[in-house]
Length: 205
Ligand code: GRF
Image (cartoon, rainbow, N blue to C red):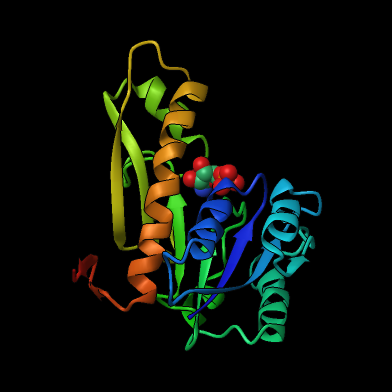
């Protein structure tokens, strides 16, 4: 199964997926493209220099919703990435995909979020967790639906929150776990071990 990884920044989750592929841990995943909506995203350099990946920039950020996503579809098509043969992995991609795009790639888009959803969706999830005073937070890999950070959950991993934690210290601790569960989720989906039934995801081992 082909992988397109969409990023906007440093790309550490992208790195974790590409490194797992390189180690031979995701034998059915074939990464073909890293795309960013930010031209100078650090992840683009990592993708090219460390993993020899094709990269593309689509920085028409003034375009809203489907107007942007139509261009995205054109780029994906260039790499023969389509819903029947591919997975789109959002890895810190700071744009909300349009309902049209989500519909076309139904159950083919994954996202990682730095909280135990449905707690703390949206921006600054780790700051929200610290400010709320929860004792446990974590990260979630889920399928993407129209809503923000909704969509059936594939894997979650919990992380303790300590009284001395700041947004930064908690983010760093959660990120270590993100790098474990995202490749694992990609592995499960590419190996066709994931069945979605309503909101529930069943995994066969
Ligand atoms: C991660 O915390 C991820 O959970 C969130 O955005 C951040 C991206 O970080 N969606 P990176 O670019 O993968 O390092």
